Amino acid sequence: MSQTLSRGLQVLELLAREGRPLTAQEMAKSLGLSRPIVYRLLHTLAQHHLLSNEVENGRYDLGLGLLSLSRSVQKDLRSAAFPIIKSLVHQLDTTAVLGLRDGDEVVYVLAVEPEFARMAVRSREGTRRPIDDSTSGLALRLTLEPSPDDDEELRQARAKGFAARHIVIDYQATAIAAPIPSFPGPSDACVTVLFPNVIDDIDDKAAVIVEAAQRVARVVRI
Image 1 (cartoon, rainbow, N blue to C red):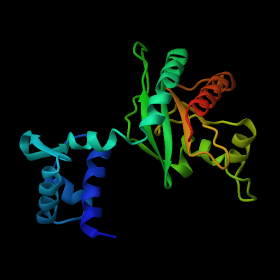
Image 2: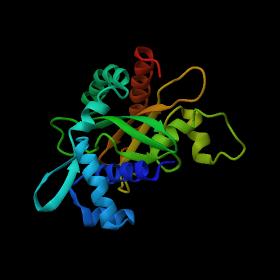
Image 3: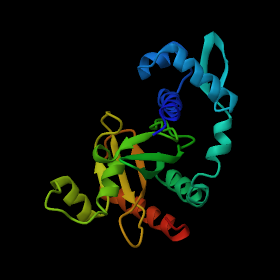
Image 4: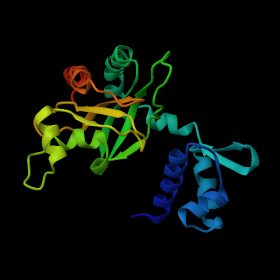
């Protein structure tokens, strides 16, 4: 593995995770690197327009060059899924996201929030959640072959065909996720709906979400 390339990617991942501009000193501290190394990385990334240093107080932010790189990433999936996800948001009046498996994480490649809801869960595209400890991850894992090591939560989710938890990003709320069917083999994509409070009619809401996930599968090949 290229150490320099890995460090440069860590800088981009840190800025994406923090969601705000950072100074070189802040990045060096977070990444455990010396400031001279971080400055060299920042200079190189800025030359390729992946970083912007046109931020006050010596802070750096993600650059517009990333847009040209990300524009084609899962473009067909996002384009095909968007009207379905938007319709789901309108129907349930809450936030919905499209998640893709990336190693041992689920990354949200599409997030749609309701326009006029009094209260909604905010979610950014690029947000990552662990496969083993998230509702989205549970939805993907339920499509795996059953194992004697499966816990009760996974067995129940597999029996129902969807995952549900009364916690959203460490808050008491409700998340419901349905895998997007993939044949053959386990699913690598899911639709997750995030409710800002704890709801009781999970099965009714889940039926709508499962149907939306099936519609996505029909219009795009995962």
